[in-house]
Each structure stands twice: as structure tokens, then as C-alpha cells.
Length: 226
Image (cartoon, rainbow, N blue to C red; front, side, top):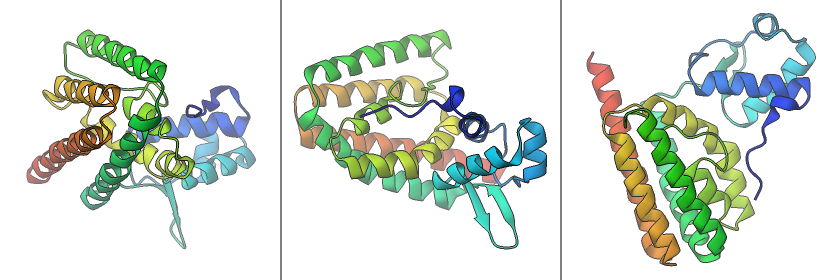
């Protein structure tokens, strides 16, 4: 499977799509913010034609929403929407992991081990505080589901859930003790894949995502009490 397309060097529409997408995912552009064409065209120094194309692409991957009489806004990930994203992830990524365990080549599995070594080095560089993964194949979860061999499943995960997941994860990447725990869980998943134990690999992935959601849920609860 191909990695997520990097549009930084593509057409003007591709370039502004990438810039707005990253601003939304990383929180530079706040959730719920109105996406007025005039303001965006000025901010990103681009004409409205390519901008409209970029906004259509952002709507297609669920980062912006358009409503009658309300215009276009950045998606808002409230507790209910985040819960739904994690429920979908658990079911679909769990099954994708089962499939990937059956079809990944030995070289691809070795690449996963090397990827986790790189992630560990990145975590150590932050003193164990942050586990941030770049988009596409450098992302542990993306790498696995993109290798599952089911085109329909990959397309849905990549185009409907992936960017929402990145938004969620950006909010939780600095949670205390999450980095080392997540890395350990990732290594256990790869060991199960390497052993070709599809059922166990799926169970570990589902447990891993459940654990992630519990932390997110706890974070949201604390924020609501403040």
C-alpha cells in the first residue's frame, strides 16, 4: 500500500490542503472555528479557487464540516465523537491487525521492529514525555492497517478515521506515563504478528486502543471538572 500522500510539493490546492490539515490536526486552528474563504485566502496567501478545492478535500476526510446557513467550520471532537472514533478504531484496526498478521512479509515485520526502535529514540529525546508519530508509514498504527491486504478496509480507515485519530492523539501525546506504556504495547503487538498469532495480535491491538480510550476519557473528565 502507498503511504499517505504528502501534498507539500503538489499543486497549490494540494499545498494549502496540507497546511490547513496540519494546522487543524495540531490545534493551531481551533476546533469549531469558522473557515471563511476570505480570511483563509488572506492567511494562506492563496486565491479562492485552489482554496475551495482544498476545503472540499478537508471535508472529505472529516476535518471540516459544512452546514446549511452556518458555513464551514473545523470539526469539533467532543467526548461523544471521540468515543465513537475509538470504538470504530478498536473494531476496525483490531481486524486489520488480524489480517496483517496473516499477510505481512518478514521484511515488513522487520521494518516494524526498526520503526519502534526509532520511536523509542524519539521518546528518549523528550525525556520519556512525548510519543508523537508522523503521518503515514512512520505511524505504527497506519503501517499495520495499510498492510492488511483489504483495500476497502484501508480506504475507510485512511479516509474516514485517520485524521480524526491524529487530532485525538495530538491531544494525548503528552499524557504522563503514556509514551513508555504505549511503546511497550506496540512491541507486544509486533511480537504477536511476528509469531503469526493473528487472534492474539487482534486482541492486543483492541486492548491497546481500549487503554488509549480510557486515558482520553479520564483526561476529558478532568477537563470538565476544572
